[in-house]
Length: 318
Image (cartoon, rainbow, N blue to C red; front, top):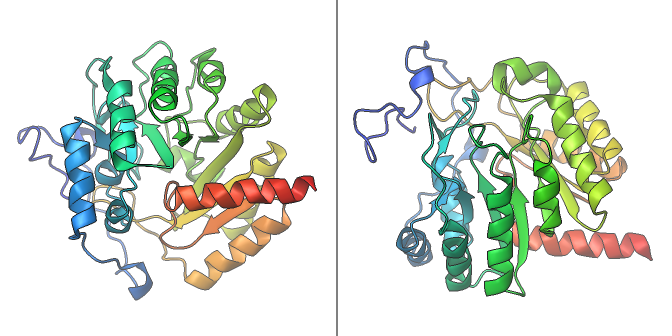
């Protein structure tokens, strides 16, 4: 269980000040299919050292991803740009909340350097929400993409962006930098937004993904949701239909895990056979790629999945 007080960077500041006074939300005990080994390999340590040496943040650490041991052992890290502090306070997320610091102008080059040192054939870059910035951090995303292209020309780039809500022109700036995969997660079904993701708007997120395809149809689009937050099966299927109406290529579905007792409770642990069923249904709706399992996360196996995604598009074109 992750503690709610940040005792590393500032022992006096709560990691989630907006949640401190909330009553605890109890989740049911974790089933055996959701457990993972603690990270303790040499590869994990090497990845951590490279991340630290370049002064970078990763969503693997900040969000408490259960797959960090597996991914970092293979030197697969998801970089989180624009700092470690988010301007929103979603009920599910473990990333620190508050007023962020100014952008680090050298960060794009540091991300590119770390990408080269890790030898990544496919890199994933995400960020905190930066509602404090006029463009939501769009130009910083674009600079990071360009820096990686310059340093690692053969590396394919996947980005996982915020929604750039009320930031006119921001999406166009990021899309113009031509990432190979543009990911933006819906996170949950529309009926749960006010509780789970109150700062976002479901149909704005759908439109953002649709707009990427309108700007550049060659960019793969991707989105993901969590289950176990109180959604109904028919709602998940409706999300699939909405994403397909926006021509989204890749869908991920994973189990929500509660970071602390101050976060939204897990309403239900969805068994593996239901994830398999969701995957089958999603493929029938026309997605090129689907990943659905209890431990599925947006960037888990991203490189292997990208290769399969390209192959699926090629097969469809024949």
